[in-house]
Image (cartoon, rainbow, N blue to C red; front, side, top):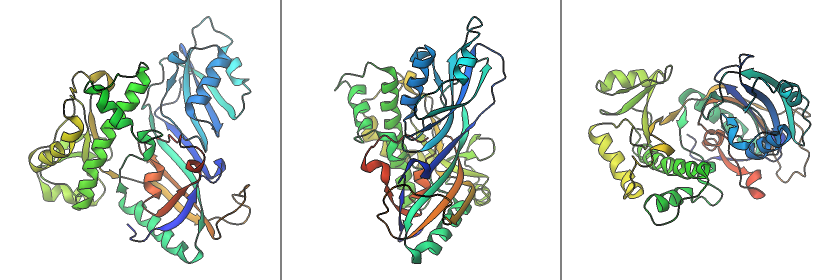
Length: 362
C-alpha cells in the first residue's frame, strides 16, 4: 500500500456514500413473510426499520434484516416482516408507505424470514472529496493496485461502538465483572466486537510480519470461490494459488466451534487471543456466536476510480477543502467495510463522524 496516504474526505453529504445491498436470493412471491426492498437516506438501519414496523403495525422482534448500513449515506437493502395469509393488504400497504427519508422500492412475499448474513455483499459508489490536484494520479494508482492485490480485511471502527469499548464491555460481563445487557441484540453486538478485536489483533500481527496474504504451514485457508476451508499442508502449492487469487489465509472469529489452525499459526493466535479470552467460557457464549474463520485478505471486485466531472456529483454544502473529487466504485463481500478499503488509499476524514458516530456499514 502507499507509504504516504493522500488526504480525502468521505461522507461530506449522504449522496457521497451510496450502498446497494446484494441479496443472497430474491423473494419468491409466495409465503408468510413480506420482503421490502427500501432506500433510506441519513438514517440508521435501526431507525428506518423501526419507522417501517410502526407504520405496518409489526413488532420489531419479528423483523428480519440481512445487514446494517451506514447512517450518513444513501443505501438500499431488504427487510422482512411477518405476512400471514390473513394479512391480505400488507403488500399494498407496504408499497404505499410514505416515510421521511425512506422510499419503498419493492415488496414481495417469501417463505422464510430474512436472517443476518443473508446477503452476498454490498456495492459501493463513493465520492472522496478534497484530494490535492498533485496527488490524484497517486491515489488512482493505489486504488488500482488494491483492486489487483486486495487489502488486509480488518473490521472497521464501526464494529466497536460509539465509544469504541464494546469488546471490553463483552469481556467484563462474560467474566462476571459486570452485568450483561438485557437486550439480546446488544449482547450479540458486544460479543461480535470481542470477536472482532481478537481478529484485528491477529491480522495486525500477520500484517507486521508480512504473512497476511501468504499461506503458512498450518494455516486454515479459505477458497475464494466456494468459501471452503482447509489446512495448509503444501505451502508452495498454496502460495501459488494465493498468488492467483484462488485462496487466502484466515483469522479467528472465536467461538467454541471455530476451526483452529495448527503449529506456529495456532500458537500465534492463542497467544494473541489469551488476554481477551482469559476467564471467558466460549461454550456458554455459543448462543452469541459459535465461531468461524474470516479471510485475512479482502478481495475488492468491480473496482473503478475516476475524477468527478463538473456537475456529475454536486456538493450541496460549503466546501472547505480545495482539490479534486474522486469517484470510487467497488463490490465487497458481506462483512467487509468500505472504509477498510479506502483507508488503505487515503488519509480519510470521515465527515459523518464530525457530527454523528453511528456508522454501521457491513
